[in-house]
Image (cartoon, rainbow, N blue to C red):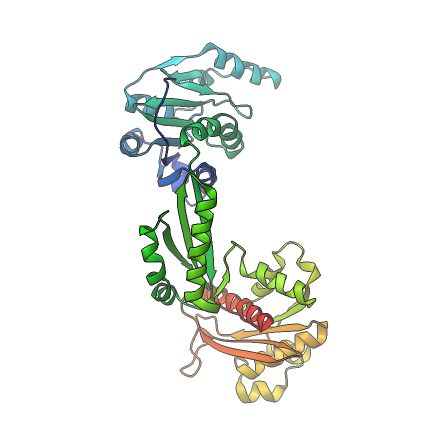
Length: 423
């Protein structure tokens, strides 16, 4: 492989395989590589997913090589006719392929150790692009390759994560680290709940927009999902302390602008925050859920160690369960309806009473698609959080599908617990 000069700052990832364009296989390699590259200070500018079609792959590679400092392909290095990455990369770069006896011997011995004869089709895996450095694969038969194109790198990695990840760590990361020149990419994630994406944008945009003109410049991206809006901040440079200080200042300004909608600036999910607050107080929680069907408790118990502060709960879908197990008065359901603030409060009080928890959650609502009325349309949800100190209840009207309403409701319940615990 020829000697290289110049710093690597940008990368593009090309995931190869027609199976990745179906609903049956997810491209997890790109996620792993993005994290690994970011840790080296290399920004992933574009990701591609291409089927096993030579013309399409050639077109994507031509564009990627023209833009990025490093292009990494994943997959298409196997022994079958549809494994075309080696051939298409060589053709795109105007290079030939040649067989490497050492690779062929390694593959032959790998089969021999299993008491099998190497099929002839595996010979193609011993072909290497002229001028490339081949990368040993200790977990499979497909070696990787690193080849130069001008002052750029093209790296071919196998598709199975069990082969790709150890190969990247052993053979690729050291090469890229040397070319990254000590540059670092630092990120922060600010998490908010209880506000829509547009509401967060309205408050945050005047704060984050000027950050791109500061030194070091900070880029901000807003990502929204049901019940959660995240602000992702990133900056790059040579000194980690300077980068971290700049991000800390930016996080502080955004937190001031967004107020108590912010629940995390260190990447933790809201259920982690709730758990920490419960531990701090020495309290335990229980939940009574109707429309969420157990999602609140599922999220809480997803946190390792949650058995220390989650007692349990009741999925009270039928009114009889609300009455007989949680002690919700019949007259309250008859007067206010099963979806009401008084029923939510009674559910929270009831589950707290029957479990001995210090704090109780009650959720009741209409997730849809049917069951709504002009007075209480689909998406109407009441969430109550009670303790010996006080009783809180809120009415929400959530948009979207049944699944979205349930997700919004669980997120709202967790946020109300957070606010209750924080006073």
